[in-house]
Length: 193
Image (cartoon, rainbow, N blue to C red; front, side, top):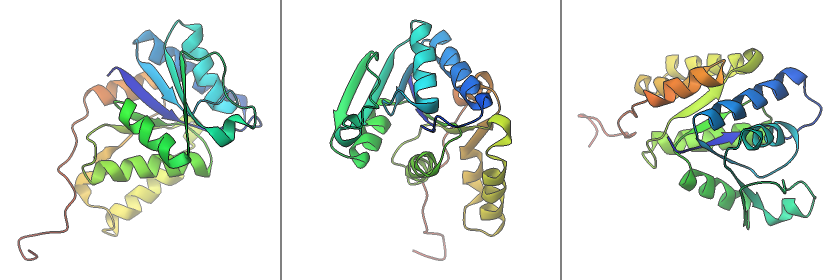
């Protein structure tokens, strides 16, 4: 893997445990010479993961919509900052430039980014790994929801392994290296053609 997109929160008010995890994620990426692709902000976990990669001499590409730059949250020390017109353009560019996707703790925006890219994988729009870095058991309720989706047959069993999770950056990156995408989602069966 040459580049990984990291989705994470921009809040400055979170527990230090999450900021420490973002720093560890950044160090892990830099140590493996994996380029960080992220949302381009200097605040919250977003800024922490970018700063950690840069501090280790790694490469960071930020992708930021113009309207957020005007709020003065753009990280000015990145290897490259790409400005786009919309949030949709941001996600598309991140998907294009990344070999995998990791969601760290965050709010609704982080979840929306993760679920969209996960769904694109189910639909065969990409065959890249999608992971959840489960810091401080943050994603335990979401993982239980995935189990419910599978049990209640809203998600086919073959897609459950797409939910890659670990509580360490090293662990999730190791799982990414062993990832094999499932067959493309279809609603057609032998009885339904």
